[in-house]
Length: 300
Image (cartoon, rainbow, N blue to C red; front, side, top):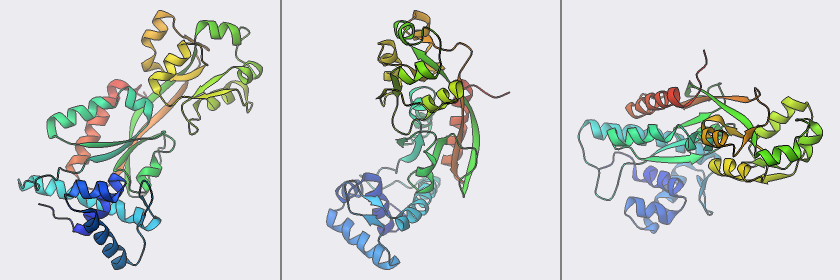
């Protein structure tokens, strides 16, 4: 059974699945029924809530509503569990939506989700987003919590410090000898090919500004893969900033080297989540804090 208004359930399903057809499959109804429910909800509120595109996206009004609906879904699942009420066949519990940066996902983060799934059978909808931008997903209601580099709380949310992810500048030894034989300076960094995760990734530029105080525009490869970063650097494709927790074997075998021993970037990470009373959020928070204590550097 479900305690949620069918129109609101359809609204959340369309945005969760990205289409009316996907929402129909999730809720075991026809696409026509989903369309009628969305139209009725929009007529009732007097505003367009969903942009009919591929994938479907929320309007500004829809984003405000989505956050409230996802909170209702979270509390609904806990209420039904407390009363030992089974959900209707074909309607699994909604996954918990979380935003996380790719480097955390590739290192310390997944163990926490695995433990929660094992103990409480929770499902997850993980959104990968840069730590400097993940709060946008929290603000628009797409996720219930986010790993972020921002210590200031989003309105209506709670912040917990997780620890620090340390990034080292690395390159293959042959690449370093060819491009940085005389050390790191504005001239060499401006010429050497650089690896960047995507166009939101500012770590490499932040490191170059710290070293040179200059704004440089080196040749750039875009490579959206944390593990691919280290491999690409080892193959001589370019230099990059990589999490130290991913570099043990590569540094030990000499596949890559640190370009500036004793110089790094520390990125503090925080867990921000809705400020609602929820056993699921409490469990998720506890699991992430425990995983971060083992996977991230802790401030003294």
